[in-house]
Length: 256
Image 1 (cartoon, rainbow, N blue to C red):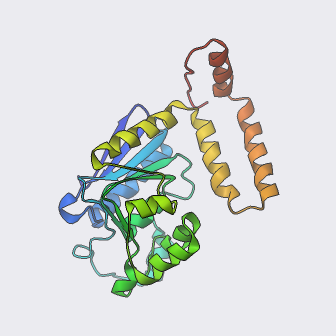
Image 2: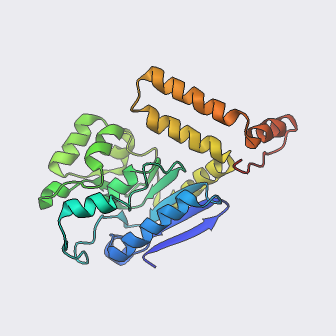
Image 3: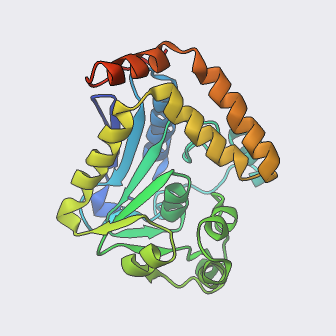
């Protein structure tokens, strides 16, 4: 399969599995990834997802130019009908961790930018190189990159198409952790399991408050956060959390 999915202990492990093509996206893998994101979004057994690429050379290099057929209709019609389904949906409130091994270029970096956490191997390379082929970062990279990095650095990457390495990505806040390649998936698993062991509704509310709050004035963001706190107050999981704390045992959350 061009994209593999395994679900273990409430964690969905999504692997772009075309290492012979640097895990680039052909039509089959694009369709598969679109279906997987919908499964992650709607399956109550899944609480968090880890996205990575097979092998250690490449996370994803975007569209496979050799296997992408020319458009059969105008771009506007395609975009308005389909949107950008390979990118995690803007209303996907379950967290997604990008474990970036090797090259994250073009659409590959844009998919990583749509994730909530990004960790990288020491050999990772990042770039939006579209200007070098007379194109434009079309999966929201022009909007997301300046929001997660200093604008001067983001603009240099966007306008020159130059790539940066893992240590630069860490220094500029593009990723939170850099580890040796053999340690990357272990770290991703560790973070995912911590998230999956927390109360699912609380995790999703925390993501929603943080993501939507960025586009609100601070006062409105605080009010929205208070509203979500009130929504969570009477959940069964919150009662379980307090009971487990009092009884000095690990809580068992059900997402209710």
